[in-house]
Image 1: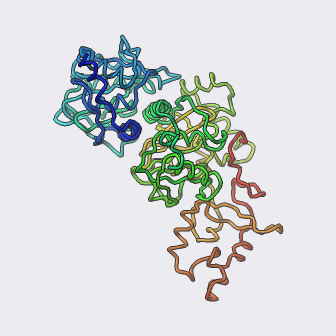
Image 2: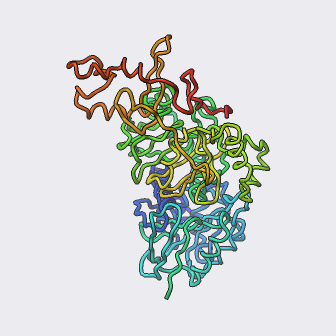
Image 3: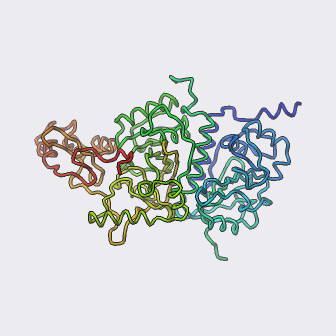
Length: 203
Length: 329
């Protein structure tokens, strides 16, 4: 009983303004891919859902958006109850049915092509994947070009799938279909929309 | 706030989430029109309900809002939308282009290049560039899916066959990042080059047609043309009669019923800023007309009238730009 009462807490204190601020950070990240955006947005969800991922969930998800949780997050009853109470989401049984996915352990996540890709006519009917990473630094460097990027931009997020480069290349080839990523760690996020093309590095 | 019974920025939170999700997909797929559940707004369709909904979904208390209608801050549409957001969101407003964080526009892009961090929100009457060539949504959607844009080139070719040049002067189609053909809303084609590699995020909202689309910053936006008929913008013979600016878009102002007219900057903020920075004796027309020294008399407003002959391309002789957009292509 006490555990359930706890689930009612940890949402936005100022839902309207905090959702707006969080959305602007996400939009800014998506409009300028491969560039870290710092944000003060945080909710107080139960672990292992992070404060920033919780804030993004409270900002973008509701009863219209089925959400898929990876095993690390769905294994927590507290996370599912918290999301259900604060956003009203339904949970998708399979990745392909979800508008959003919350990924607690990106190194072990399903391949990107298992998620909704949209159709050639309606490429917007595709999934947005929100990845909780350990750090946005310290990983293998990845250089991107494309819409929203002036020249090139390089990031080195830590904890992505081992075959990220190959998977992202396929995601790019499916354009305009494909998934969009939001990488989060601490109080920073990086947007990787499907329009961001990975630049091949020799050597 | 005068209207405490409304949520911040008018829209309810579920509507904002729906619009925000559409904006994120629009940004991820530049030039693609994302369907959204457009709401009734307290203004009629055709008055910018799409742009207003986009602005309401992104607007925060720290934003500084500028609203322009055909370049002007002081026309009906601009004034009423600015007042709307002052009332329902309590945000600061401005007429200054560089000071604004969000600029909502009907049919113009400011002359001053926009900077990083600014957002330009367009009011769009008809978002589908192929609509006047193919009326069925099922077909135009398939054409976008298959990247089948031959019909658009046929239309531009027919312009050349009939008129000797591409006669489309506004809502001139562009191709975004080599993929989607997009309607830049009924801006004069003069403004098309400003969309290319702009530092600002550009969002397009069509309320009646229920579509949102976007151009992220630093995005390739190419106006369609032919090798032997390259894209060209309108040119004006004379500078602005008030501030003397060249290479800006001019509006025709009818002065009397004997054919008197003058051409002035369509971007009122640009024009006013220039006039304020000019020394008094250098000013032409406007409040400085007839002021002070004899040096100004040769370039008074009346000379500007006499010399402003003919009509710039894309304008009708009645002085009304063909830009209201709703179905008049």
